[in-house]
Length: 156
Image 1 (cartoon, rainbow, N blue to C red):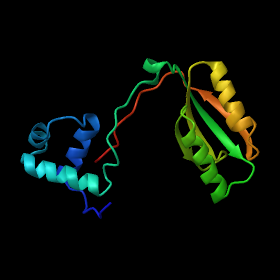
Image 2 (image 1 turned 45 degrees about the vertical axis):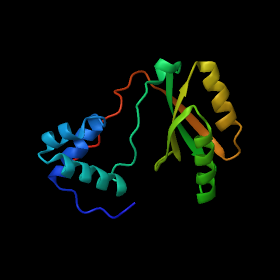
Image 3 (image 1 turned 180 degrees about the vertical axis):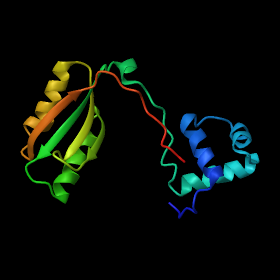
Image 4 (image 1 turned 180 degrees about the horizontal axis):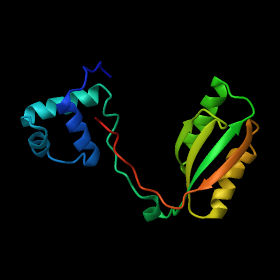
């Protein structure tokens, strides 16, 4: 990752467009941004190298692959310290049903997004990950009824 110069209006417009569709041809992006194709390409490369663009991914709807349930689990630990936080993140990364996890402030220590094929598999997962875990004091499950999907990061 290299140091990035302050973002200008061309960078911001380019980031806005890339968040909507990363597979737009460079020529089309350049036209929308108001740059030449080579200049647009150089900016894209610079934004990637600097870590402004972290990665490019396909967003897949879990339901289409047999994961119809989505939950947010709020987890509170007995004691939070750097080793425990690292251990929890390792556990989350190792579990395929854990889609995202955040170490948060407030009444809980973690917010974890989990997908499941059915409530029984979800129950098995939380028993194994949270009920049986010696460092977990409590956890609370919020079942997602409907979601908006991912939204682009505001660039203005």
